[in-house]
Image (cartoon, rainbow, N blue to C red; front, top):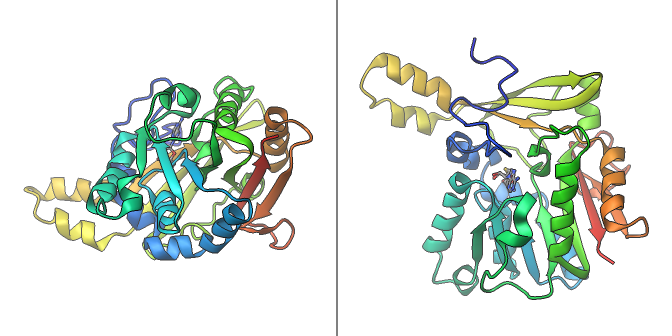
Length: 306
Ligand code: SAH
């Protein structure tokens, strides 16, 4: 069966270098469905992030995993200046479309969107017009995005390069806001909660979780997302043969993404290594102070550059 757990991403996605797991456009197409209505998605944490950024006087924000643009759009609507980057042109396409549709609104007219890979992000943003010279007030990397980066070297070297780039793009005194799923729980239970503080769509049927250990070290978590999307079903009913129809139906409803399972303690140590031991670092569980929620689905780190 081609669909074994050893395939890290949906069929048709090339596996070269740091892969764009979204390259087949499959996840990109159903992403809006996956995240639920934009409003209900961002309702969950809009207040949290807006007060966090406002209290710290942040105005210029860099969203380094903008995807289809959900967080960037929320921040633009809240009056922030936003620059958005992502490695996947398939995902960026949706953000670019939205910028075009809303171009008459000043914030959207000024919205900077660039293709950018975390491993080369500083270069990718060099000479881009409209971004602050001395760094952003805040860099955000949300929605379990950072965990997409595999650790093939086994020493988190790519992760550290990416975090250094994020830090270099933050101005002194600015912050990095970065999250990951609660992999401690995922590794302990072998299960991923399908609905959580970020993703609450009624269309998510389930997420199947497969954990891969290499020499006893948890190395990769593969999640198979099963969505029920009636709109897409209808669209495909016009396709020519029944067989084609059937295969399209099943493919549309399923996409696969893989993650490196960051444990909270390991992530904390890694951030401290990059930002320095004395950097102010606060961890939240599902946007509440740590400890308030038992077994949160997400951990969110806020760390300040000295
Ligand atoms: N923050 C958005 C998107 C989440 S999907 C949301 O919550 O909806 C994760 C995104 O991370 C994808 O769009 C993917 O292309 C991007 N990504 C993964 N690896 C990347 C890398 N190395 N550099 C830049 N972006 C990357």
